[in-house]
Length: 418
Image 1: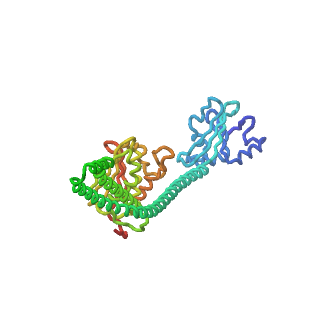
Image 2 (image 1 turned 30 degrees about the vertical axis):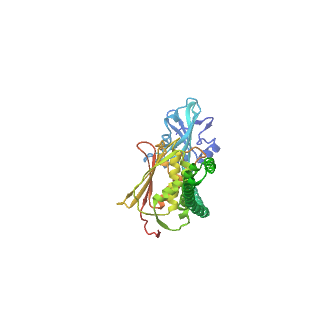
Image 3 (image 1 turned 120 degrees about the horizontal axis):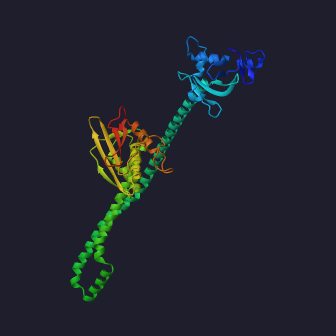
């Protein structure tokens, strides 16, 4: 190869430049000097080693032209005279090089100075760091989800204990008030009957003045209305107390199994109705409930956990409805598969196609910021999976979303109490 100048310097082979020769022989970067006809005027040892690693030409493995072939076509175009830089890969995709091309002069003609640095190991380390970072993110998401589920379970257990205590305290006064109303109804009925008997017996024997006085008092107290309305008031009071007793019982049923360690055979319809009563205050102003429930066998489960699933699905159904709509509850039994299912359908807009695959992901929510944690469906999914079941979600043909909870009737190898 003839000697040729590099800028104002000469090639390292020229005796007059031992420092430059030593520097280019020593550095790890591959250095190539290429003229405008793509002829290589110089390649330092690092460039020859790098070309050998590429193994592009078995007959001439140290041919530095293999390095030039890695550069894309735009690397040789230089409209602004500033050169080019970028990252290139070997044919197998494993070798990664940072390449730079600078405009240069060889024998007074335009040429190119190429610098290439092997960054394969650095890229491998970056890829490994990205992979580890992704694993850490997934582990953190799982940990956060598990922590939230533990907090939810602890909260449910606390609510269960509180509800049981409150229910017991409320039931005592309700019991004697209810008993007193029954007695009051009987007493009132007897007193009214006695008054009417006196009226019939004494009316013919009283003088006109006394009758007039009695009539005036009767009109003033509106006795005719009171005598008919008083039994109705007592009956309505009794119905109100019965409603309170049902709510208290529903609260006990909803939370009772939070204090139970084992599996129990329960009526899912009863749990669904209890849960509906608990959340009814959030639903009653915007939704009416329609029931299409079929007969179900008793199901082995943790009732409070299943009730928590029902609560999440009912509240989500209510949130999906705008001003006014319908929530439809349906159920059925697949005897062949030993499964039962309960579906909760809302009349809202349904679930967007892009959101559907992520609907059970932890922290994913379609609600406005600050109005949802994105954990309700994720926790529900985990509870149902723990029971050996599944949650299916779909958009209804007539609109709205349908969540279907499928549970096995019997659990394998469990100790079940009725």
